[in-house]
Image (cartoon, rainbow, N blue to C red):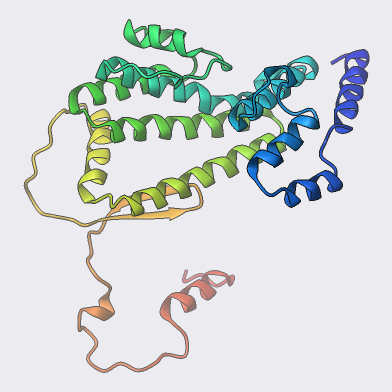
Length: 288
């Protein structure tokens, strides 16, 4: 960015800071007796579009978002830094288009047009199966989600495939941005999404069958097979989460030794075996 453009960008942002809500305005909002009064106050402060003549919260917020992106386009030297913010809308359009094409049910106002591929364009690409024209890693995701919904009619499994790809793309875009604040935003957004998915799964009572379907779809891709016989020994599957990573493993050893009755006489130990082992690992001692 040249010095002239940088100076303009700084001046533009400084000018917009004047229109930010002050503490006094926030106090006024808190004192409003209804959502309509609060919305009216925001419109009077310049939010939304005064010429629209209507008080609709969604329209006001959408208009503010349009203003924000317009400003970013004016001053940002590289718009790809902000891909992490627009990716959810792009993948939403993919999800909506796949469902419309596979179910042949048309839904109005379900697409975003303020992203790299508008809803109309996305629908045309999916309808014609022109997945290779999609950016980044979207072609593989689109094919997998499309085939899954077409053959299983399982909309939730289709959502799972696209949601996972969305989060992966956000993390990758955050890293590529080269900006710490953008990368941290991507990591936080993905972590929050993982929590929402976990809570939603718990609330909706997702059972082992749902998890098995997701695992089988991944195994089909890994082993190049479309069918797995359910025979042989059974092994419990354990799923654990650590921040934004999930580990799925087979329990090959069963319950803990102390629960199998191998030790007849027990007593409270001054320190657990695992803690003792961890302390030894922190020391320079090595058995050799």
